[in-house]
Length: 408
Image (tube, rainbow, N blue to C red; front, side, top):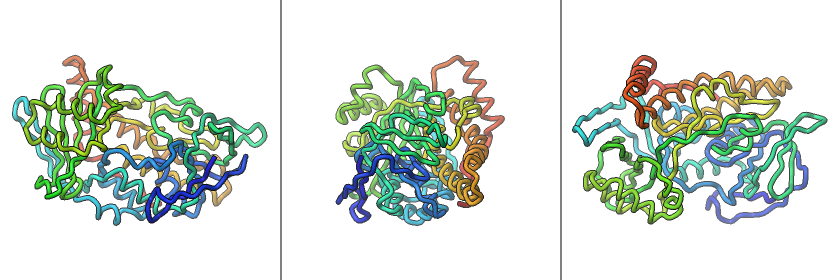
């Protein structure tokens, strides 16, 4: 098992290796070095609490698509001390535009008090890494099992290479296939019948698009685009998942051809945007989610083990809240740990964290679930019921973006 020190100047270059001793204990172990894991580590660091991050990939997971961050996410990033730097990398979005190509109907929602920007995932990851001590992250370290120490009841992490460590606290930020979630007995995420193709297109001389997020639909196909800056546009294609997509997802050229095939009857500017995309940015992924009732009744902590981010609440990207909610988790969790550890209370901080987060996550997952059901094939009655529930309980469709997770 190797500790890999990330160069702050060149991000993931100039890697130094340091052997980790067998059974090297730690106070807090974070499993997963994605957005949630790094944000949690940074939040703890800001509170003067040390933690180690264990990531199964050989380097930081900086590849991937873009992330929409609404007001609530920017509030959390402000608490981490990185919002100002990140704002400089992405233009503010002034409105949301929904367009039906079937009947020509259109709805525009101006963003007045809300803040929305589209960040490259790599930029967010790099910024979090640069703010952290370089020696706290271990890469190429895959946790395969977690067991409780028979004497202290503290969790022991066992790694694929045979090493293990004991920690006072374990925080699972290891995504949809979380080892920590399995240890807690949480239900795995379920698949939707839909998938998304995601990518970037670079316009060297400027794209000239309005600073709005637009989503257009024709039949069962949806296409969305949102500017990142004056030259880069993030886009997605949503369609039904097919058995062939497992093979298509492995080949960027096949992903692009699939996206072009799905959007052949969309406006030419959309087709041209996909045709000229950055081929290396393309991702095809099937959508997964945790049902609202699983979040309502899930046992998110046992002893001194808990989860955050997608390991706790995975949902489809219909509200654009995945990353923002994960950063909220980081703020609340670090705050709870800092408050309780000063009183030498071991289990109380995790229980407080789960209590503070649960209903916020239930509301987000319910709104996402109902929105997704409108896009899934189902009866007219089901569609009508989902629409009515959204109108009754979520009539302010952007209300969730004004949430404040509080100070760190």
